[in-house]
Length: 306
Image (cartoon, rainbow, N blue to C red):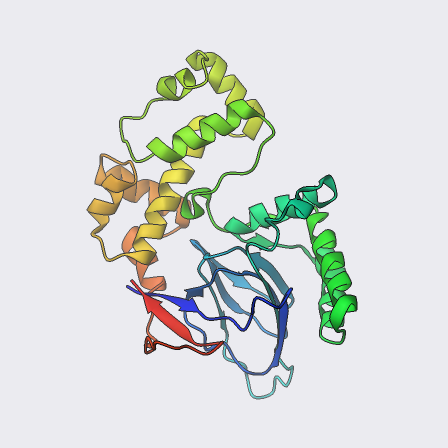
C-alpha cells in the first residue's frame, strides 16, 4: 500500500494559507502533510476518512486534522438536477508555529489543547460551525495583519467549542489526551511504550506509579472516565489499523505487533470496534491513483511514500 505526502502551498513567510474551491471535485488520494488543516465543506455529501475513522458526512462538514494524519473526502455523485455548488474552504498552517515561547503563555492554553486534540482529527458540531464559517469566509477577503487577527479569532472560537468529537483512535496517532496529572502522564507514556507486549498486565502498569492494582483501577477510571482495559484495547486497535493502512504486512503479523497473541481474538475485537474485519478495513484504504514521485514537486502535488 502507499500513502501520499502532499506538498502544500504554505511557505515559511506565511502565517497560514486559505484555499477556496468551487465545484472542483475530490480528486485527492488518501494523503497527509506536516501542516494543520481545517476543512469546511458546503454543498456536498459522501465519505470522509480521517486516520482510522471512516464516516459518512453531510452538507456543512467542519474538521480539523493534525500533522501527518491521513485524510480524504470522497463526494457522492450528484444528480443532474442538483445544481447546488460544492464549495471547499481549506485553511492550512504550520505545525511548529505554536512552539515559540510566546505561545506558551496561559492565554493560548485552550488553543494548545485544540492543536493537541487535532492529532486525532476533530469534528465540530453545527453550533461551532455557524460562526467558524463566517470567520473562514472573512479570511478569503482580508489581508496582512487584519487576516492574522481573524485567524486567531477563529482558533480561539474553535478552542472554546463544546461537544467536539475526536475521529481517529488514540493508538493510530500514538496520542493521548493531555493531563495535568504527572501520575497519569507516566501511565500514558508507559502504555505507549509497552502496549505491543501481549503479556502486559495492569499490575505492572500500576507498579510504574507505585499503586496497587485496585487503587490503580480506581485512579485510572476516575481520571479518564474509562477502564484501563478499554483504553489499552483502543491503543492496540488504533495501532493495528495504522499498520493495515500504512503497510502490506500480513494480518497475523499486525495482530502480534499490536499486542494480540491470538488472531481470532484480534479479528473479533477489530470487527466489534470498526464494524468490519481487518481485511475489509484495509480494502477501504487502497489507493488507486498513481502519482509520479518527482524530485521537485509543486504545491498541490503528491509524493508517494511506503
